[in-house]
Length: 192
Image (tube, rainbow, N blue to C red; front, side, top):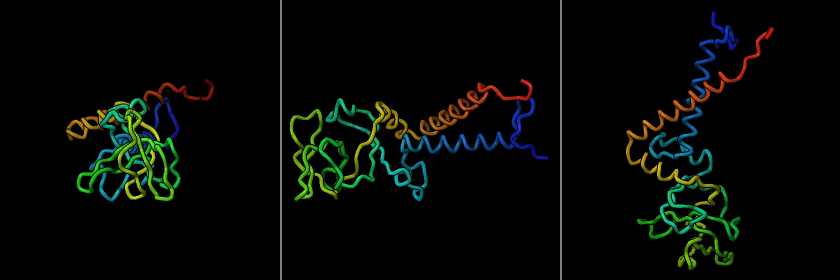
């Protein structure tokens, strides 16, 4: 006889326990892949970025300090249309030649809607950028950032063994943390 989710003598059934662990692992995997945006971790057919509409990038220069410190992980909302940008938005765009282009995060300084181009400037820079951003080079709007996380992600990505160990630690922490939280919640037993 398979037990359902009923608690007997403070113990949950093996079926419920297995389902809880599977949910914890799935949630942890999605969380880690979204936060760290680990390339090559998920199959190419499963695009995490298109699922959530965000791209993650690491800030490598001080041109946007103090708003975006070096080593921050930024999350770019790729769903915001170029036509909806406003002065003051922090955007990500491709700069440079096709073969050597880099992603840049700067603030919108001015918008020339007749020419379909935007002038940008890094907060820590004195001058406006020499080139313009167009709809073709625009990636999206930076919605939020997590300081220092970018440094951690770069170290993890540089060493696959460290990446695997980090994922295992995060999963273990999530599962054990949830288990501890469940035990702290008092059970509602009859006659108690």
